[in-house]
Image 1 (cartoon, helix red, strand yellow):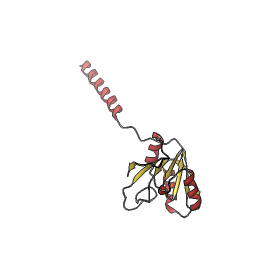
Image 2: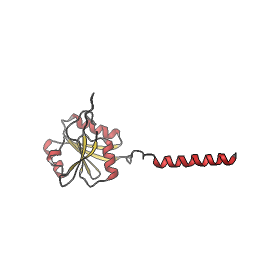
Image 3: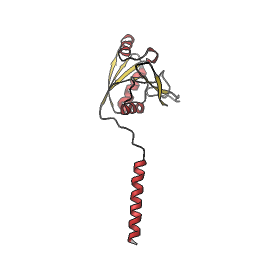
Image 4: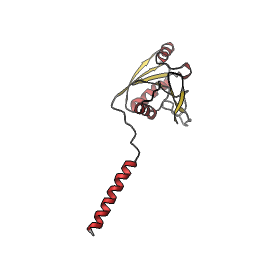
Length: 156
């Protein structure tokens, strides 16, 4: 009888080990206080909401208010094509984040470290971070690179 229990115990242990190895990885957590600098227009209400959303999700956020001409200069400095420029731009590590990009896409970017300039959500889709509403529109999170190539990184 004890050899039967021993066999069952070993089988159960093996099942636990197999299930642990097949389980999806836990979502990547940010190291404490990953810094983000957000450049925004002082007249934009959604920019502050998006920055607050980043803070609520573990980022250490510095906000810099500036005029639209100063904001254009920041966009140019970081290589953001005029067709992708939004009302706020953020810099996290070596990446540009344009518009209402969700935290899960930023975390994925920081983990994967693709060779892109950054991420952008074009427009102000209802339901995106900082643009919460009664409904949620579907939108794409795009990557862009120095050659002007744009591709879909995530669909929301």
